[in-house]
Image 1 (tube, rainbow, N blue to C red):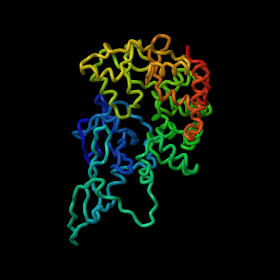
Image 2: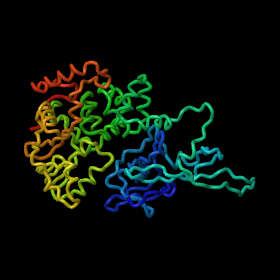
Image 3: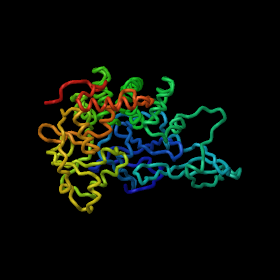
Image 4: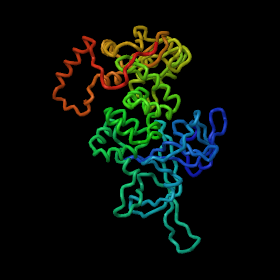
Length: 443
C-alpha cells in the first residue's frame, strides 16, 4: 500500500483503476463500522461505476492509494451497494456530526476524517479534523480548528435518544465470533434476528460459522436472498456448503446463482462429496505455491491476519495451476520447518516426505486417525490424478466429531463421551451427523 494515512474528503472523486490500468469508477464515500473500544474500522469504498451504479469495494482489494488515484486487485462486484445496519458512510453521515471533547473543553463539528493503515493491514480512523464554535459574532468569523483522535471525543447525543445501529454493533465488536454467537443465542429470537440483520456481512458470516445449523438456517432465511448470498460469499466454502445443504434444494440453487461465481463454484464442488469423507470435510482454500517459492515468500503468506491458524500451519506445494484442482501435488512444508532455514531457501527442497495425502473418498474416521497418529494440524486431499483439491484441518474434524449440542454442553458426561468417541474411532463407525447431503463423490 503506497499510502498509510489519507483524508477521506480528498478521496471523493478519485479514480479507481484495475491492475491493468483500466478505469473502473470513482470514489464516492468510505464505509466504516464502529467498534467498542477502538476507532471505527474502514471496511471499504463506495465506488460509482458507469451507469451511475454505486458498488462496494472492500479495503482488502485496495493495493494503492495515492496521487489522486486508487488501484485495486482485480474485478469489482457490480452488485448495487446497499448499506447495512451498523455501517456508516463517512462523507454522507459522519462529516458534520457534533462531538464533545472528553476533557470538558467544549464541542466541535467534524469536518474531515483521516484513515490509516495498521500493522495488521486493516484501515481505521486515525484522526478527526474538527472545528470549534466561533468565538465572535462576526458573520465572517470562523471557529478554531484542531485535530483529535477518536478517543479524545464522543458523539453528542440528546437525552432519551435511542441507541443507534452503529452503537449497538459497537457493543459487540470486541467479542470473538464464537462468543458473539453464544451471546446471540441467549437473546430472544426476534432480538437475535434484529442483531443479525445489523451485523456487517463478514462479521455475520464468522458468527454463523459458530452457530448450530438450525439457527444458521433461521437467520439466513430471514435476511432475504440477496443479503444471504453476500453473507455466504464471506463464509468458508466448507461452512457455506454445510449451510446450503440444510436448505431446500431449489432455495439453495437460488442462493448459489446469486453468489460470486468463484465462491459458488467452490461450494458446488464440495456439495458433490459425502459428508463423512475427506472431500466432505475439507476446505478448498489452502495456501498453494510452486516448488520455486522461497521460505520468505511462504512466511509472508502465512502472516496474513485473515488466515485461519490451522491453514497457516503448512503450505502446499504443487505444479501449476495453483488453484484447486491444481497440478500434481508435490508435498507440504510445515511452518516450523520454514523457520529453520534461510529466507532464500526454496520450498521444493523442504517437503515433508513422510506425509502422504488422502483421497477425497477417504473416510472421516481414517482422516481422524491420521491427524491423531502423526500429530498433524492438517492433511492434504488429492483426487485420482494426484491433484490437490483441498485440505482437512483439525477444526474441520472437531466440528464433525462433536455432537450438535456441544455449545450448550454442561460437561457432566465428558468421560462417557470420550469413551464413546474412542470406541467409534476404533471401529470406524463414526455416526453420520446432520449436515451436507449424502451421495457419492465425483468419479
